[in-house]
Amino acid sequence: QVRLVESGGGLVQPGGSLRLSCTASGSSSSITTMGWYRQDPGKARELVATITGGVRPNYADSVKGRFTISRDNAKNTVYLQMNSLKPEDTAVYYCNLINRADMTTYWGQGTQVTISS
Figure (cartoon, rainbow, N blue to C red):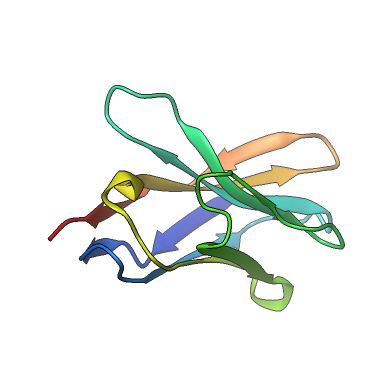
């Protein structure tokens, strides 16, 4: 059973930065897509960024140039560096892993990110 554990959320002022981390355990697949999604109450969950080994990362237009996704395969960890944060970035951020062998999808428990002065 794959387990995703997120960390790094919190409260920051507009213009500030945060770094989210997500570590996967229990995955035996060598080919996975890992990424971040976010969800505001009353809204649909939306893609923020994803990364697959050997493929250029994919970003939502709203975060391009401000967020950077990266992964450390040795640690089974994906990171989301978020800079120039805006109030509209406020949401619960969820880590996601897709096993490319069978397309099984896993989710973390979510971490709250709040941008407010």
